[in-house]
Image 1 (cartoon, rainbow over the protein chains, first blue to last red):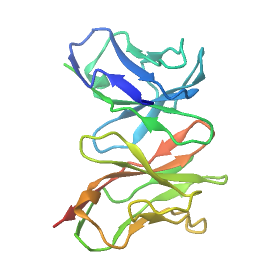
Image 2: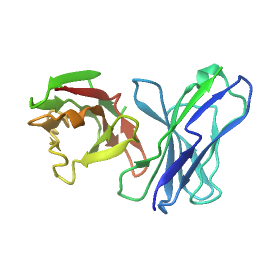
Image 3: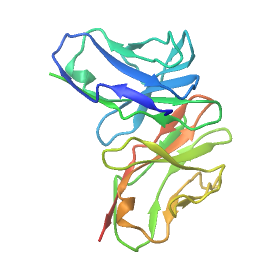
Image 4: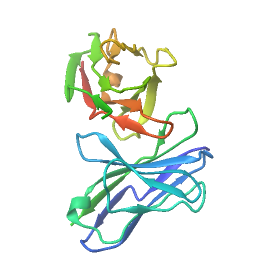
Length: 111
Length: 108
């Protein structure tokens, strides 16, 4: 079934740890996105990709990095997690002139 | 700068009452606007887009370029409409700008 998957759903981790949030899609879309959302606030675009080997930073500055080695996979990495990184991270995929399809999100807490 | 404003964080109505969720935007070009919805414990999903001019689950939204608004309306709210609603503007072929969202609570 065509879908977009994020793992883990919830993550609690200590300060200084390296983490990777996974995002995979079986929809065949070229464009993928990472949004960051604090409770009750708007979604902020932090990274996007047009396709394989294409990654760009979004509007909100983020210390995270992304890679796009395969069309279906768009992981987000934090080299050294800090409490200020605590947030919800939403991954999305879309094609030309289509809406964005979102994953379930990863709620990250850095203690 | 392009911006989407949803002035209400919470809108509470009784079942059967009309609902209007407000959305205003600022955009220099020809806007493409969407409403997304997030039900409890579910992912964010598209509700409707202005170019389709469709009614989904009884909701409609009309783009008013003069007032730069894209308000979401439903004549008779149902309890299952309770959710978070986000207005979004497509700024370019890849970028969606979201508002801060409005929580709709429909009371029995």
